[in-house]
Image (cartoon, rainbow, N blue to C red; front, side, top):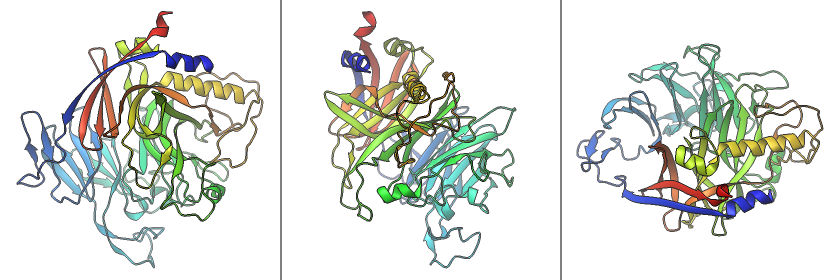
Length: 478
């Protein structure tokens, strides 16, 4: 691993960026719920109610139509941001302490008119529908037809239909895995649990039935008395860190695997049981979670910490991420192919997340997914030689030694019912492309244009920065 660090220390980084002002804070248009022309370059859209904040966005790559998940509404917009159709999702009478929700059985808790925050918005291309999951009724989902947002289904009568009881819009992330005509699709769901692990698994794989009204919609892919396609946070974990949770920032599928990027409290640095989190710092680690697409028992679950260092400053608090292709020019620098997947990630400085965050320091970093997978394979091989422990403190509060087994571990190894789930202890360090000290970066997207890799980052103040990933690595010329 020492050679790996030397490799990173000899980087000569060249990056170019341009700053644009986004029309995020322009005055409200005279006519509500329409797109308005700000100048010859930009158009904007405002919901008719200023309290209906935007939560999620999905773009249909086939025609450019835009779907917006907003508080109490789902909008379908044209490429020009004109409203094509909308669908009301709230408000409704509810109480988050009603489990099962009051639409299933009477609830003794007081009911109030409650907004429906959109927590997940996914396009299911194979079934020509939109999955829109909200905060009402413990996180039930609507399946809406893409063409006109007509409600095709809204399963709510089984516990598998309640995906998350957390009200925040950024608390759930989903990835659809499609198998063509060979078998039904799957929905991988990752969510914060807000102290209620008995109700919600932190990560699971669900059946995505073709028929939107099918009884088995969102059922676990596999479930028996001992094994299920899910992982729950153990109650022992909350004894060590009472407000422990896993916050999912991004997710994607690549090759034979599904990945989620997370922000997790450190187990060792947690407060004593019963202490308040209102006015204290907490140490966090950013981790990538990997699972095999076809692993019904989650024996392939592996976590690896991510971060990056620039100018001696550590950036360890994940803010946003985006999967893209390397492109010809960046691929040469990273030692990968032009069509290989790379991961852009925005981190803020340090590891301590404070109740009132004041630091604006952040960095945009890039990872070759191939390198992350190689690090995971190295860890799997060492564990199956009996070296070390499972090193997953939040799931296995006690250290459990790895068990030796004679087998070949290749790039697509999906685990056994031993040495799982597994953690990687050493951080995979990304390559820093650009840092910002005065206006924290909070989002990122990227694409390849004429062999060049370009990233766009959004900042806390509403600016957009264009970063050219033009890295020169002199160690490749040795």
